[in-house]
Length: 398
Ligand SMILES: Cc1cc2nc3c(=O)[nH]c(=O)nc-3n(C[C@H](O)[C@H](O)[C@H](O)COP(=O)(O)OP(=O)(O)OC[C@H]3O[C@@H](n4cnc5c(N)ncnc54)[C@H](O)[C@@H]3O)c2cc1C
Image (cartoon, rainbow, N blue to C red):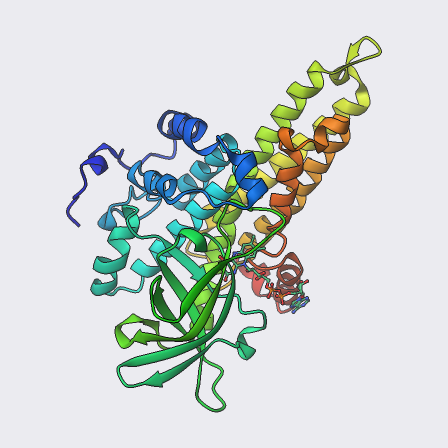
């Protein structure tokens, strides 16, 4: 693809594995996050207000969203490991959990659209998404299992009519294009198809979801009231279930990368806060009970980081199972559980300060809890791990 936008000329080329991604993240995105993303996070969280489209657009223009995307579509072509480490650093600098959540999701969706291999989709959707003039959303969750989806696609002349409801669409408030999964309306048919819907399609309505955490991510509900979708916007004609499995399989790994960076930042902030606190003439950090808890925090972070890097490397491995790979699920499970424990520790150590909105810890706890269901519920991932272990699929290739 020809490089069209002037700002794109500023994008750096592929980074090598030895380059310090932490330094690169700080130099390229540190100021932007500090001056444009972090301010106002408490107010946005309070009102459930999405981060603006302008911010996501800038993230695209600066080359953040495209950091791990293929060069053919204007990305920097970095490896999954490098992209995951970049997201970890973004999570470290960014106080607004909604930002890396939406950016990483959109990068994954752009890749998925591109992998359709269709030139018309690349021209109309992928390229504008890379440069931030179009934003994608993922509309799968239906409130039931995929064999009973209530969202139905009915074939008519020239296209399809879609009716139903999609829940928890991350970034839905600022998205222009949705990847929507629907059940074929043929008797006895449970097959899923995947469609491209655009904001403004007649019959498509978008409502904000009022969630406990991740309140700045514009998570929305879509109502599909006989939305006409022309035949060229059918993305996947058969076996949409395999399509979503492949998407979520990778998604789980990138989903949790920013959380490891945030855990690091929370621990550092907690230590700094504890050093300031004097009790009985000593800083709290001089007490062994506190030191042990800080040690536990570090352990939680490093265990999370280790499994996450392994899962990221696995994405480029010939042994990687594109439909369901155990390491990605284990990484997601581990990071969420460890992250929630780490924030609990910080809150216990900090007393009342840990519960103040202005100190952010309580918000991080609400945000991290959003990942218990997000990306596939923790409980179902454990069930899948058990099934794979019993049938010995998992153990063969790890
Ligand atoms: C912050 C956030 C962001 C999200 N973003 C998106 C998005 O962008 N797009 C999108 O489509 N969806 C999104 N989701 C939805 C998310 O993917 C689903 O909530 C998740 O997959 C769980 O599905 P469910 O809510 O239908 O619950 P279910 O899967 O029905 O689970 C309900 C309960 O039943 C249990 N359960 C279900 N099946 C089994 C089983 N076989 N064995 C044991 N227990 C089981 C689960 O553990 C859970 O406790 C998001 C959710 C959140 C919270």
